[in-house]
Amino acid sequence: MVQVKIPTPLRKYTAGAGGVEAQGATVAALVDDLERRKVIGSTIYGPRTIAIRGNYDDVNRLCSEVADKYGWAFVNINVRPYYTEGAKTYGFEIAEQLGWRLPQHIVVPTAGGTILPKVAKAFRELRDLGLVDGDFKIYTAQAAGCAPVVQALHKGTDLITPVKPATIAKSIAIGNPADGFYVLKAVRESGGWGEAVTDAEIVDAIRLLARTEGIFTEPAGGTTVAVTKKLIDQGRIPRNESIVVSVTGNGYKTLEAVLDTVEQPFRIAARLTDFDELYARLAGGREASAV
Image (cartoon, rainbow, N blue to C red; front, side, top):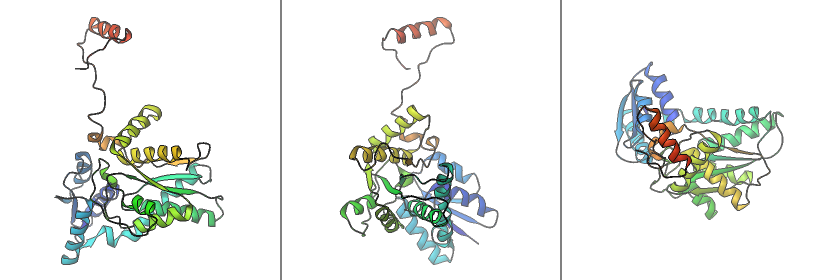
């Protein structure tokens, strides 16, 4: 059986490309400007890969049309009920790692809207089973260049107006999120909120997390860090309460997002005298050139 696949998010795509290839032909559809490291991480499994000019929403639409015309399976539709339930694992593991306690606040990035409602569901199920107690508030984080859910939340409406993505946070750049309604529902029921941040704020947050915690995240994680800061500054999240900030991807897959913002290394010959000279300039506060 031929299966049409789309990377939203890419981890789902990578797992599918590897797992299903052993069972039959796989056609993997992806956006044309997807980061090269993400492309290689999936094409290594051998699917027939098609790069489509457009954004994630364009690829989703085309894959739906192709699946309908040729009678193929489309993982974003046929398997969606199963992999969305699997997203609850994230919520289960958070509670377990906190010693079977719920965080008072959790910030989650929103792309298609799969993860956030399922984290909320996981917390509720654990509470119903008596494994945890207490309440939690859940918050949605989006990039300002693609924030249809946050816009609907701020307007107080259930109607999500699709947008054309324009952000470095490509892994969450879904202009017409399939589960956006459920994100709004989960956020409102918990008493949470949502915010969007600019690309500049995302990059600053990526650098902040790397510098202070030793974690290099891709832009989705930078988005949640920046949104968390904004929510704290607004007084929506108290500083003295437990907060989980969802960092959902590794920065090594998206080097392009910060490549032009990092300091270049100093280059010297393999001579002690050259190092001594550079060290003296740095120690003396003089400007040393990174060449």
